[in-house]
Length: 97
Image (cartoon, rainbow, N blue to C red; front, side, top):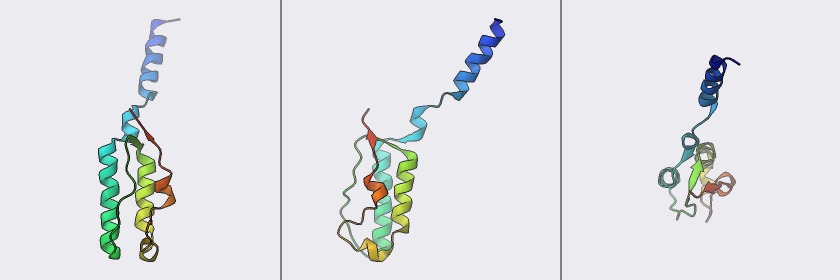
């Protein structure tokens, strides 16, 4: 086969390989976003909660965004519970690296 074929194949593979760091939040950033979402919801609903969701590893961006959206759409009536954490937040997995 021609060397140009291998060069094209190599370029194709390089462009198709996704950087895994681009799809994860670091723990500090993920925790900051959760704290902010809880604080905004507490402020708007007039209730104060102790945060029970803490991430010790990298969190997938789409999972965290889903959790934050669930917090935003939780009614203030439901937010008055002792632990109003949505199920989508409880199901987030993280990666220790």
